Length: 119
Image (cartoon, rainbow, N blue to C red):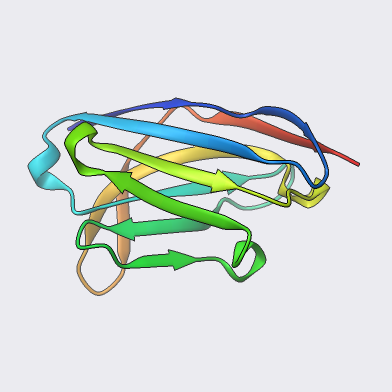
């Protein structure tokens, strides 16, 4: 089992920036990818960004060019830098960890952090 602790989030005006962070602990050797999902009210949870520990990244089309995912290996921490935020980015953001074989498979989840973007 892997434990994930998130920080960051909050309220920001459209066009602003926020950074989320997520630190993993526990059975780190059972994971090779971490990522961020989000869920807005009435919508399905969607993958925002993922990073494989070799460095390869994946982004949803809706955040490409605005969000950047990165990882500090020494700290077992993943960051999500969010720039040029839009009201439609408002959601609860969840950190996730799991295994990438041929696809992202996440089975460890953080508690979620609220991001609200005002217009």
